[in-house]
Amino acid sequence: MSRLLIRGGTVVNADRKFVADVYCEDGIIKQVAPNITQPSQCEVVDATGKLVMPGGIDTHTHMQLPFMGTVAVDDFYSGTRAAVAGGTTMIIDFVLGSRGTSLLDAYDQWRGWADPKVVCDYSFHVGVTWWSEQVGKDMKKLVDEKGVNSFKMFLAYKNVFQLDDSELLASFKVCGEIGALAQVHAENGDVIDDQSKRMIELGITGPEGHAMCRPEEVEGEATTRATVLAHQVNCPLYVVHVMSKSAADAVLDARKKGRIVFGEPIAASLGTDGTHYCHHDWSHAAAHVMGPPLRPDKGTPEYLMKLLASGQLDCTGTDNCTFNRNQKAMGRDDFRKIPNGVNGVEDRMSVIWEKGVHAGMMDACRFVAVTSTTAARIFNIYPRKGIIAPGSDADIVVWDPEASRTISANTHHQAVDFNIFEGMTCHGVAVVTISRGKVVWDHGKLNVERGAGRYIPREPYSTIVYDTILRRNTTRQPQKVDRKPYSGPVWTKDGDIMVGDAAPASAESSAADDTPTKDTSSSQTTTPGSSSRRTEAPGGGRASSRVLQPPGGGGSGIFFG
Ligand code: URQ
Ligand code: ZN
Ligand code: ZN
Image (cartoon, rainbow, N blue to C red; front, side, top):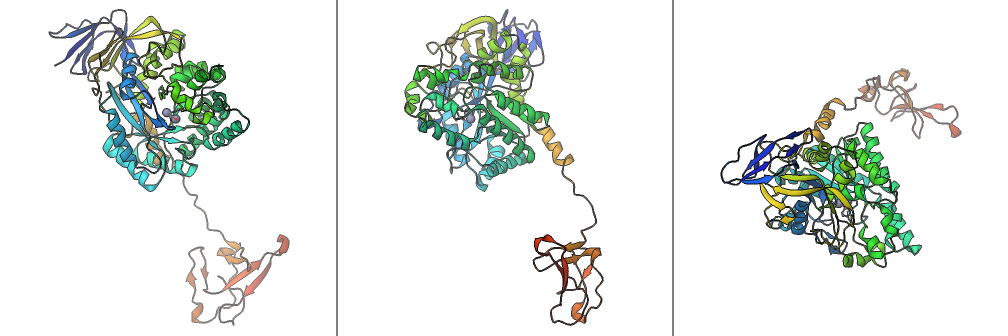
């Protein structure tokens, strides 16, 4: 039995802050109370003067992603190792299989990559990178059998991951039917494809071209479109990597209209901006290339932070997808070949503490909400994760709010050779990180074990995501209007057919073969084979009424079709 007592700290959950000790056994929190007596054979962590918070949950990573002709350099070992060094105790990564391949096979492949390497717990979103009926069936299987409850659809990466609107609707419908959350990479991939060619034609091959071909309105448009499509099929939506004011406003606008939408800004969009694309050093500029890009509007990070602080944006990830300078250099002559992605998994919590809490925009409880608790609730692993409470996993970070550290690639624990937060001094430092009751980071020293992390399955129909959606399935269905059927002339190329009450009674009706039958399209009986037709005069003038003889001729008067 492993015993751990965290003593003397102030516990911070999303709802309140209070002085208490935390006692854990075999990776589970057993007691949260003041002055807990230290049991025998118990490891003790002194948290005096520190905050004791739920370990961070990074909602968006791509460890060792095969992408754009190479593979992200931070893998599931170095990536999760760096995560715990920064106070994050769970990552949610993405299975992104190639077009035409089975989602189930891709899931198995990613599990094979992650399970032997992760040093903290993790889970997977699954990318819907193409569409067919079989993909829909695989989505259902992933929910029923593999604990997946979130799928990412792309409106960008034309011919690679991009789905068209009909495919987006189809995939959103399936999400709505299986209790899964639809996530979107919201950029208009057709505009990007078109405008990137224009940049190259103009001789703009540098990283600045990457940002210039996809201005923030291209992200904003796709974000709005995704919220409309999802709402139309009553599917909840989660916008990943919100990178701009335009995208954030689209999320807010959708929420004001009653759509169920969540927005995820990331460490990069909260901590830095797109002016780096114009840096004189090519590698420096290229290191910031990601999609959607960082924005040149220097007010963007604070704008997003304020929305995050006020609850208008929800939780944070990093989109950690790292490539070394030699990999980025694949695009030295053409920005379209620069592998997209930046770092963040180690620095997310310190960056948000510095720009959010230390800057006076949010309190410590809101910090816990946006770095851990809300993610746990949205992805349906709360209260197992995301809270310091008896029965919850002992995923904990002892946080020093007053300490500071200066971020640098020279000292970070990630494998990548660049850090987009280089030189940034952040208040708020993880001094001890505990993963399922084991101290894995202790005052600058890692004590991790490959494969020690677990895959965390997630049930569908998360309350915060689906309770309203399910209610709408019953209470907000469109209702038809009850009305008398149409009666009167109906235009046909041979002249009008008169139907319903307005049809004049037929003066004569011939023998048995004229037996009236019930015409289901109107309340009147009609005589088979006969009709009276009105032809539209050329130019739409007053139509004249023409009477066609019933088959077999004979009879007179007006007949019905
Ligand atoms: O689009 C994503 O989220 C993946 C492919 C990572 N790359 C990126 O630039 N965001
Ligand atoms: Zn994306
Ligand atoms: Zn991503």
